[in-house]
Image (cartoon, rainbow, N blue to C red; front, side, top):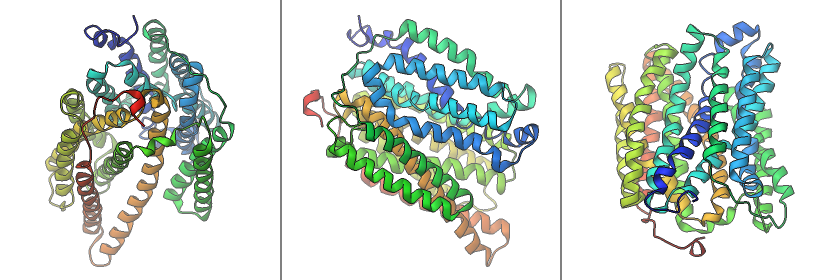
Length: 472
């Protein structure tokens, strides 16, 4: 019997493949942040400089971006099970090679291999879980899937700091090998057979334009955020032009690489715009708070990582709850409640002063986590419910890649705004107070964005049980 065919037994059967998918996603997301804390130590060990070594991080992110748009076509052509396990295998191989790197150049190359393998894991994993879960329990199952997406970024810095300090830097990467091998073995055993869809015509031009545009945009935005060079601006312009060409090609192609026609659905369009803004708010908050703790409060990276764990644990508590409540009430009430909590937390953060206690900061982090857990996965599930099930494998790469680009641009914009506000206050205040006021102004901007999200969330409609043919 295939997964999801029995109403009484399907949810129990879904645990094994769900755990396999969670393990795979956890590894990939973890490696997006696990190297960050170890950078100073690795720069010293490899005898290089930060400008060269940062390519171990940038190269990984660029490789991730390059293959995300290919996930839908690869899944439809070769089957989700085969592609998911193959990408996990490539990621595991890249991890093993990274642990054996002797030079910075080797580490950069092996990180790229990691990224090429890991880029498709998240969109394919989300699509697989959505398709395998019984419709009446999708919220609960998708809620479980949200745990690694929220825990992994917070656990990365803590795990990295402990491994580098107490074991060896090699284990930052080597730890993925046994997990990857076990994931593949269990996936072979427990994943149900996945069907393939025959493509009438290969979107060759889309397969070229999509990775090029995404890589150029991510590279340009990251470089622009570091040094603001004219080269970065040029790369962004070329990337946007390539992206525009890609959109034109996809809209005209009979079998597009990314199914942009889903934007014809008002439910989908409203939901994904709301998701973009929420992602910007949350990602920016989790960037600003560590900066504040280290630059203003003067905590160490490890201490900051431990404090940030409160956000991850709080979200880990409410994510499964949000999934279960979604099955009963739909997305709108949960997103509304979650955004109210996020709004309140950001409002407090916008009023920070030099006298603000660390306890209040932790309380705000916990509130952010609670709001995130209640709102994010219900909104993601709502988005996938608004499209035909046969298009889910094409929609998850679209949502994943678009979020990465939107967040990249937002981070550059928010850090630029923070810098300008600190400089503005610096004309009349000392460095410490100017920094605090600058962070407060930036959090107030995020508070305004959260209020906008509250208004947009009122337009969400409770998912209706529609047949695939009735969905856009």
